[in-house]
Length: 306
Ligand code: DON
Image (cartoon, rainbow, N blue to C red; front, side, top):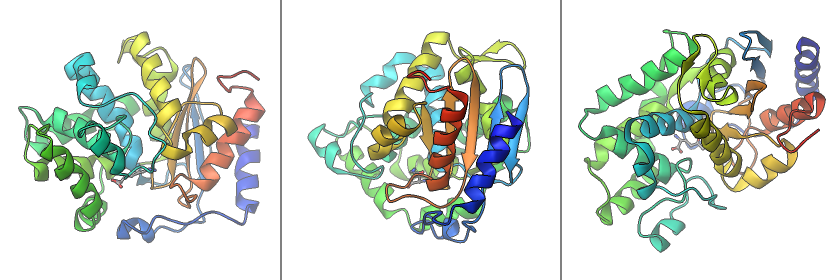
């Protein structure tokens, strides 16, 4: 495994086109694109890494995997009345489908869907309490109490969040929101601004590769059935309108973020986190996808076979 990761990191270092960092969140525009990290966490507890695997980055939309898991744990299958389970085929911040479907986002990973999940999580809580619950959950999964929100990124998102505010108010116009729009948006922006490194992220995803059980403690985080379903949503919706391309090239459930991270799950085998801040035109990490494509080919771990 270490040889595989070293080879991938070396190949990524030699790749000239590293994509473009996200600029619509000014704080993310300042990140040096010449960075790459990969970590692989195995159910045995072993961890392998290459590149700058202890460098923190903004997990952005990858946080939506964890907020979905918390929402399912708290509210169960009732959440599916607020968000769908279908791939969107549209960009992550698109508003068009919302009008056709009366303010019900097609899945929990597009921005509108994650904002709807944030509204559900706020029920009966203050934003600070909900954020504490999300952070505590991620810290528990990663077995690392140092994981925190990057306030600078959160503020940067709030200052430039007109599109997300539009999505939220549009949904609220259909009467779906149970909480003030500003509180929902604040919660959403802050959970997107959680900073982690690839070691922490790969460990946090391990329950999805291990039938819902956190291997370190043997503690069931979700049922095996729920883990399977979260993985299927990641496969079909985790890369927005690039999900088909990602499944075609990598063949693993994966969730990307505009900070350049991707969490990929090889069910029964490993949780893999990659990071490289340069993005492709859709907004998914360019080298991250390339690295995972190589990783899946070298390991033969695609869910579609070797
Ligand atoms: O709301 C946003 O636009 C960001 N906080 C998250 C978007 C994102 O990560 C899309 N991923 N590729």
